[in-house]
Image (cartoon, rainbow, N blue to C red):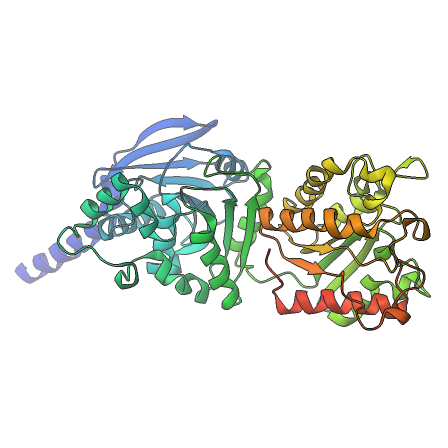
Length: 477
């Protein structure tokens, strides 16, 4: 009898241990964005779970480790789409071991209590990004994907703020022997290979003028490590944006990415969709057969069946909204080809515009080129596919006399338009494809007139683009 009692007691203790986190949650009910919100504490830290009106099958969820309610656009969109939203306050913990361990208790409690999917979507803003990275590095099997918005990646960035660095020293209990950057193995910067090797997809959102956690010292390292391991990463840089505001103008753009990751669909789509946007050179004017000899058709043959390349070129099109041709409006965004390219929802965008903008009657509005060109970039960068965009530097005109090339001005292309395209590439952290020298050494057989390519010229353009796409690299501006 005593033995049986002892066995029952041990069994009860095991059950209580396993269920303790759930049974001890003292839930206070409330409301957030029209949905039921449960609030509670674990080890003195605030926890929240918001239940969607119509949860998705399997109960996928988003975990915010810091700044709950700040810049909530993406949270609200995910909630509307059936995701549970969870929060566990580690805002002022700097990813120290105690907070990671407590986070695991939170994870165990909420996954059991709400029957949540074993893998969470970690959504971290700023220092919340640091915690999210550390979670993915220490518990990669529990992370479906990472949404990182101006994330802190290198904890030593905080040394620039004496108050924050002092708090790091206090929270980590390292007063006596403060570590050096290279020796601090717990730094998220030193362990980016772990989520990459585990192929945890990343959506990185950055401001290109962030001075608190600059992209070049933080987010850039994620992109470079992920690409080194050929791991899934999408990066969107917001030109002119600082550390704030976080989020996206169109938060719905993240939904397909997140849904695909929680469904385990982390690889690129096949075929990979490639949209070629541009003017008459893209359309194929000058070649012997625009349907089969234009550079997009050649690019299709080079890339093969794993890609679907479509030609959305419009002869005479401009990046300038006030651009015209024969007195008619010719801004690229006005044409059905542009709308069709948007509907195509491409994975890769090749943007090749600028030649027609150099014409005198168009370039009188040259001061508006940068803004209008950015508008075209934004039209595609926030599509559901979150495509990778390549900016082409315009091809070279054979002669300098605009009267012999329909008003196209080679000097304007080289000295004014090309620098603006390069600046757009820098601001958006997008790769460029330099087509200005693509005919070098073969000029006599590459021009059908003084600007449009022959079949050979179109082939050289296609090969240059093919080389950049398949290398996965280009000159980074």
